[in-house]
Image (cartoon, rainbow, N blue to C red; front, side, top):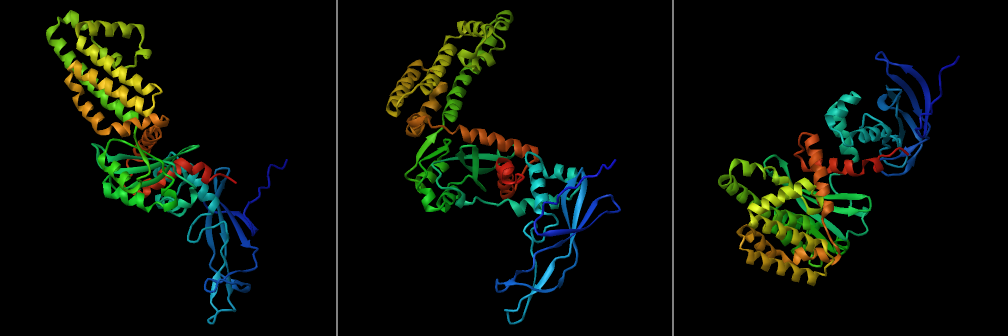
Length: 414
């Protein structure tokens, strides 16, 4: 019974001449071009005066049943009859990039494997050098954004991320939300105001004018750069950063009070409130009955801690409510007065933050604007960075982010 099958090569403008196996057991397919000419590299005209063949080249192609496949072709050369010195030009076929050891189909397949993986892993899986993988990345993925792909921006996010442990070597990520998720616009070498301002100025003017909102954290360098280059844009300090600040204040009260209670209570009494940290940090609606009772015992020993907890939740409810911007300002100022009257000093730093950033914070209430897309994206970049054991070249980081975000669509099988 015949157990062989015929498989099309799916490469345009070639003819299969011979099929064999190499000494290593790889498939070797010898092919030739069926195109009758090429374009002169000097004058750009079509030429058909055949001059001969170049040396044979071998290109790696898609594997067949996990067996490596190589194509061997002798590129045709044509002589130009229009140019004075009659130069010759080597024919270029659309399915192969010049100076690449692979076909385009193979490189697209390699890049799909590289998504959410590492250069080292792909090198081992495919049995190719890491330089081959890196070269493929450089051939197909740009080092910077292609502005022609955007009709408008509307919203951008600005945030920093540390390339090394211990919050060292910060780079700035500029992102834009899309219907499918998030796109990367830039990875900047540092978080200096001038660096960010220079990038914002480099955005084509017609796109720059479409930016209505910039989501960022409470870093003056970012805010000043936006005010300088995008005066029409609203700056939004995301509620995530605000919540992180005031929740930290409440948690500082908890640490102080727990330390005091550990010294003042008997061991038996203190044991009844041990483990309250996670219950204290939870939102009230997420508490289990046991956790709610634990907090009640804790608050009975520390009324001040209960007050801090209530103040924290009151501000959270303000952000959960559908206030106008003006209404939110009034509600937040009233909350600030309650904090001042409580005399809980741990909130003082946050009151200063509110005073300095009230306008940007309450921009959140204009349309429920948030930079949640920035925070979620940053977590994804951190995973990429850890998976690759660190990426310290900003151009390479931009390429890897782009591949992880858009690789399946860009290099899909057609």
